[in-house]
Image (cartoon, rainbow, N blue to C red):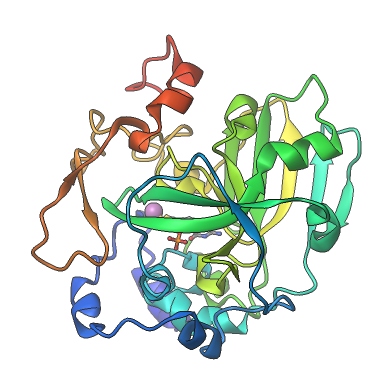
Length: 314
Ligand SMILES: Nc1nc2c(c(=O)[nH]1)N[C@H]1C(S)=C(S)[C@@H](COP(=O)(O)O)O[C@H]1N2
Ligand SMILES: [Mo]
């Protein structure tokens, strides 16, 4: 497996080097439920019981994808390049105990157990559109809480302007990290006002189940108006800083992936159009859907970018 990664590594790898596996879904006509996903070892952690969540006013009305689709068509390069690799290899990831180091420009830095960070927090169900830069999309019913809840708990200092995130680095359980496929650990960042926006959540589950491992157990970011790669998985570090953070895909291919990465049908990726998308589960011949500015969340977030040239700040 390591060899396969090494061979594919050519210094110019991009997020879309793997063709979407459309045929995969044609083979998977029988949709299985949460039970089958749990049985496959993809949902881990002590909280096997259903989580209690309240519906959120930010949810879309679109019909969600099935849990089976949501856990078998993933980008999680720590487990391989193929969309089906995370469903095959993420089961081995230990997600309990889990802690997050919070540092930088905060009043209460420290390494916090995940249970302590989420104690007393109400989980909301957020049904969000999720749009990948490769032009596929899903509708996912996340369970989570606003990132601002956590940031307010630790106290953001007035000097902070950005939030940086890092994923777990554990090659013994993450086979993709045994090669230099990407510059590990996976890194992402948001401007502080983006981070504090009520749409931005830390998700800990899907469909009332603990976060499935292929989707970034036990806790991952969800930023619904940005391309999928901004939504970093399996977070172990959150740093408040006054400098724009390095981000994995921007370091990998700066001409293709910028810091902002807002969903924008008018700004094409250098190698393909971003004007439309293919909904996962719609079948091979389903019509493509026109992509909406800010993924349809313009009312909530357009004001964050007033006066900015989004062609320049892509
Ligand atoms: N740590 C980590 N986070 C990641 C990725 C990754 O490879 N590693 N892939 C990103 C990309 S490109 C996408 S589209 C989404 C996919 O999320 P999903 O598999 O839950 O749909 O996760 C993002 N977060
Ligand atoms: Mo993506």
